[in-house]
Length: 321
Image (cartoon, rainbow, N blue to C red; front, side, top):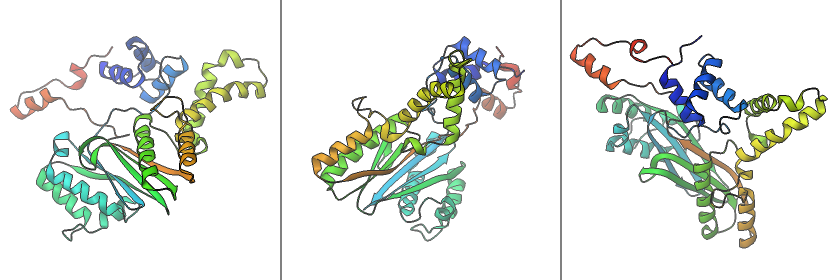
């Protein structure tokens, strides 16, 4: 059985909102597997629905830019937040984001594009690593475009114009004017930043995520479905799974501004009021460090190593519980 450390329990508490002893038990039951422990807590009704953690796991910046009916988002990672405040790093992210407006969503193609200096994005990135003295990486990019209408950008936790921690783009296809589309797009983009939808529609949600949710529902409702015919059991499971899908698809989520009106109804009302058809066709949400496991540093150990003082290993100084 894997040793369960205090830091593992702390991480699970922050992700799940469950109590310390429940988190410890969940980790023990699942051999220390964090994702499995989250599912274990949820089957016991001890954790909230599994939305991705709002905690970032890497530093750097997200950049967003819009030109006409096209918008682009880029994430560039660094090792420390200090670098994210570096003017050279910020200029790089800003320039790369504007280049991405023309290159689509392929990172390798973006790296091969020329910067204003004439050198490629990849070459400038390599030079930045050398001059700033810290590893950096161009992690991902995505572009949205509409034939008519607007792409609206919103940056949450902005550090500089177009640069920050959570960047959102919302694409609205319509012949309505900017007086209609700009405020509507901003409202939806703010919602996307806060609500973290998994997909645009219920049918777009990853089938693996839906199946995982169904497995959790079966476990939670084991007593209710025991001995029931298969069709009745599936109906019992279908309810919570359908609820999960509605609550995690952008169009059916209740917009955060009032907590009750589905986003699709907000769009429909704006269309009726304007006398124009408006279609929310797509969105992008880039959160800095999303999905990256960041290695935790031990500052005391780093100082000691620099001074030549021997230190205990992690296994020695982090207690198992």
